[in-house]
Amino acid sequence: MQNKNEYFIAEMTEIQSLEADTIKGLSSTHKYLLSKYFYDDAGSSIFQEITRMPEYYLTKTEQEILETQKEHITDSFISGDSAIDLLELGSGDGSKTKIILKLLLQKRSDFKYIPVDISSKANCDLVSELSKDIPSLKISPLTGDFFGLTDSGNINRNKRKVILFLGSNIGNFTEPEIDLFLTQLFDLCRKGDKILIGFDLKKSPEIIMKAYDDHYGLTRKFNLNHLARLNREFGADFNLSAFEHHTTYNPVSGYLKSFLVSKEQQTVNITSLGQRFVFSRWEPVFMELSRKFDIATIESLAFSHGFSVIKHFTDQKNWFTDSLWIKP
Ligand code: SAH
Ligand code: AVI
Image (cartoon, rainbow, N blue to C red; front, top):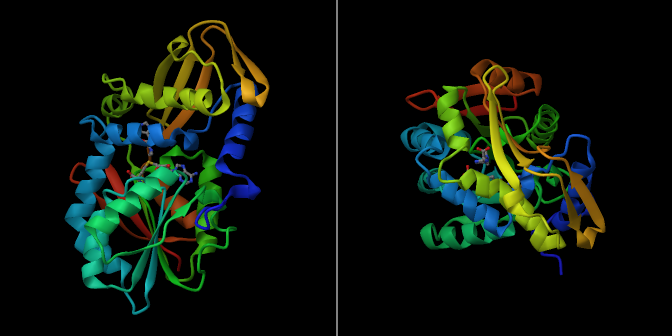
């Protein structure tokens, strides 16, 4: 039975859209898979391991920003008298968000936290963690693709809102996806609503490469888990050792791209989809974009989508920014 807190894009369950997107991506001239499907149960725990690697500076850096500037950030959320819905898109384990939630709750008790994530395990774990750690928090999780949120009828449009999109999740979007996402956010917001978006900033390519091409093999495992998921869920016969993980960074565009490259000519059968796909030797499959930004680009994204920038909360090294926008 469908859980009332689950919503789907275009009437499709996650598994139906995984099926359609897999066939589309692997049939394309330049093969690709979508990174939003990285986060099954196994993928969500590999991601948590990634966030604990010293080289994956993003989590620690954003944590520093939230810790050191939490007073200012929470004050800016509660200006005015109305109760707020605090929505977090792609909340994951919410570990950094807790910093904000705890302080916000001390300042105002009349807000509801609505974590939205495609992974139902991530949501379940988050709810049980938060109910132990912050028992008085009102929490109302939603499971599904945040791109379907505006049409899902799950959001109270009359309520004042603050929307969090942390962790540089926005870096995983293509330019058209950023456009669609920001257009949907603008539509979801009322005048005066605010959004806080985490952007990973351009920095030394060496530092960026180390975060995504780690010597523990965790990012490789994270990418290969997508193929393992297709083996588990659709009876595919991907031989994981026949693929090599490869990462590139372009300091001009700020595009960090991850690929799995087929080490040999091979045919993969996806039994329950009735599909077979041929991979040439050294044929790449594009797996994920993790884009890095600069402040000028962030400001132009805000303005071109109708938002005004209130402030960029940055860390000491200027490696990351949580950028606060308002719908004027
Ligand atoms: N915000 C957290 C987690 C980042 S990992 C942090 O900063 O650490 C990205 C999270 O977004 C995962 O939990 C994943 O399941 C979720 N996610 C990715 N694509 C999504 C989509 N299209 N809709 C909803 N959730 C998504
Ligand atoms: C969730 N997202 C912002 C991560 C990132 O940095 O792009 C996912 C990730 N991919 C590899 N390592 C971490």
